[in-house]
Amino acid sequence: MPGYNENVKKKPYGKLIIMGIISIALYAELLLNQDVINNTFGKGGIYAFLPIIAAFVFSYFHGSFTGNFWTVMGIEAAKKKKEVK
Amino acid sequence: MHDAVQAAANFINLDAVNMVYLFLVGFVGGLVSGFIGSGGAFVMTPAMMSMGVPGLVAVASNMCHKFPKALIGAIKRAKYGQVDIKLGIVLGISAEAGVLYGAHIQESIKKAFGDAGSNLYVSVAFVVILAVVGGFVLMDAWKTYKSGTTNDEEKATKIARWVQSVNIPGTMVYFKSLNARISVLFTIPLGFATGMLAATIAVGGFIGVPAMIYVLGAPSLMASASELVIAFVMGLGGSFKYAMHGLVDIRLAMIILAGSLFGIQLGAIGTTYVKPFIIKVVMGVIMVIVLFSRGLMVPVYLSQLGLIQTLGEGTVKVLKSTSFAIMIFALVLGAFIVLKAMWQGRKAERELATKEVLVR
Image (cartoon, rainbow over all chains, first blue to last red; front, side, top):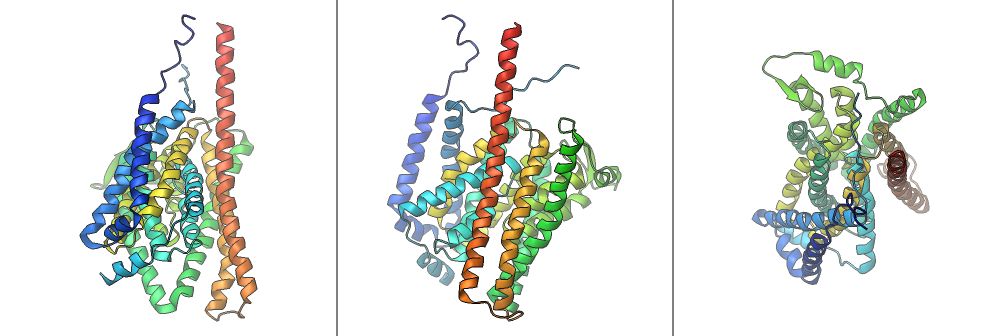
């Protein structure tokens, strides 16, 4: 049907899948090696950078994944039009 | 290093049930934070402690999930034009100082009066601040609702108009959310108070957001979005401080983050569908309910300090569980109001779109 989809934006399936796989890999790595990771990350001192860096890395990939997740689910910000006075 | 070794030994075993629990609490907390700028964190610490996580590790791990969550939320809401980065950073830096001072006071109280004394101080701070600020926010939301002006642009309060009118040369900064120049001599104490509260009850936003709205004159949407910047700045500094002592359990932080990033995105989207006064409703409702939750614990700590008759073990247990249940209820109710308002907003938008199509 021509024109049927003209207002529908393409959904970011590709990004969702890539970011999802990276997120799962990060969580799998964290949980499968939790003893080693906790011992290293919990050493304190200069090792304090490790949990901070991890938090940034996880938030980048998982944040992008969750953002795309809601977009693919069709939940997006309101498309408010400014009223012309 | 001794601390670190001890902390590492304190990292608990995580099973699937605990992980799902943290994920879900993270999701609901994230949803509320995405919407009102903060407010989810106060449940995380007791939730982790109920699993056997030592208090300090729970506080540290909570903070380490808070700053990346706030970052993602702030980026999302900046896309909607709701974030005043400059205001967030200026308040965030003074909040950092407030956190350090607040933590110092906490330590002194703990030294002088022990754990029960410290807990009593936290609970009393909770009750007094939430009663005053939460009551005020809720009353204001109610007045807006009753007067039928929910669609009007929010007006700055008298105090805010006065703050914006004061000119102290050399200290004036322009903030886009206020569309005015104000003196940083006003923002510094507000940021400091936000930080002190964050160090005491884990939720600085309960001071930060109302302060931006009522004292500085920021619109609710911008205040709650800019709070996420403050939470990021404060959380980053705080997490690093705790991580230096090896207190962050990265597994707990990242599992909560897994849930809260789903929540914060949804909460942020929700703000685009609702009228600004709903932000005040959610915030006020949560604050007032949490007040009762903490209030229930006051007799427990008073009895531990020997200031009132000693309470029976059963009574303490009942009070503790009721307090925790009320806290969870506050968060779930907040999330429910957010989702309901969002649902209604989406429905209205769809109806409008259908009408437009029909008119064409």
